[in-house]
Image (tube, rainbow, N blue to C red; front, side, top):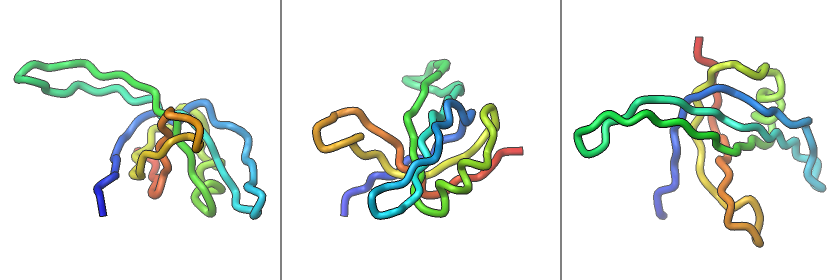
Length: 99
């Protein structure tokens, strides 16, 4: 199996209304806004990005309880938004608030 795992922390933003798949599985979509300082080629670099993210099942219900602006740490995997799209979405597998 190939490796596809992402761990990221950031601010929980742009939370969409909870929706359900045709099979009745809850889906929560949101954006994770990340800001950090990383070292690349021996130089410090400021990193800012916004990552489209989603959670399904019980985790989607949990995500809906988190208010925008909350700092969170997530792990998950990247996948295309749809079969016809090349845009990536982070599929959340674990989600925790950072206090």
